[in-house]
Length: 243
Image 1 (cartoon, one colour):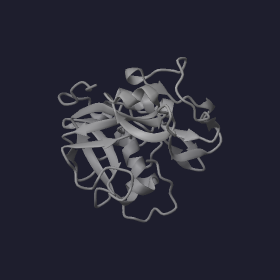
Image 2 (cartoon, one colour):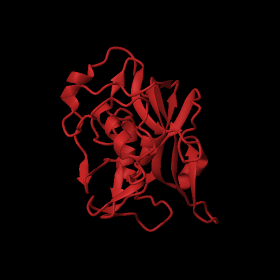
Image 3 (cartoon, helix red, strand yellow):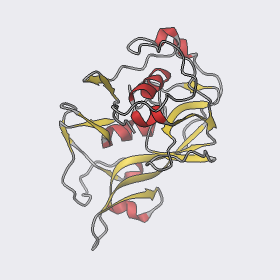
C-alpha cells in the first residue's frame, strides 16, 4: 500500500485549496480525527461476518453516537482515523489537503522518546498513527497541542506506506489483547481494527515550519513574531494533547 510519489511539482501554499477549520471547544480547536464524549465505542467482542471491513478485509471498530459533548483528547475516532490515514494526503485537523513541499508531505510528530510517539533520532522510516497536516493547522498545532508545543519533529515525507493495524485481537481461547499487527499477519483474522499505522520513509527533518502565507491566516491568527526554533518553548502545561 504505497502512496503515489509525493515529490515533483506542487501547488504553492498561497493558492492551495483551503483546509476547513476544525470545530472549537472552549476556545480550543479540536482535530477532526479525535473522538467526542457523544460517541461511544462498542462492547469488546470478537469480529463477526457482518462487521464493516476496511483495509485488507480487516473488521473495523464501529462507534455509535454523534461528535457532540466534549472532545476525548488523545483518542482517535476509529472511522475518521481510517479515512484520513488511508488517504495519506489529508490533514488530521481539518480533513482537507495536507501541505505538500518539493520534499514531500508535511508531518508534525512528538519527539519525546519517553512518550508513545516516534523517537527523537530520525531513522530512515518512522511509524505513526497520526496523519499529515496542512501548513495552517501545523502552525495551530504548535500552539494548541501540549506535546507538539514542547518538543516535536517537523518532517517532509516523500514516501508513505500503510504497514500495520492496531486493534483488539480476539484469538480463540485467549483473552482479548490490544496489538499492532503487520498487514501479512494471520492474526488479523481475529482483530477488530482501531488505527492504521503508516510508515514514513526517508523523512527529511526541517529546522522549522515553513512560514504561513497571509492568505491562510483565516481562523488562525499569526503570532506577533516568528518563533526562534522549530517548536514553541515548553510553556504549554494547560493545553491538551492532540496526539
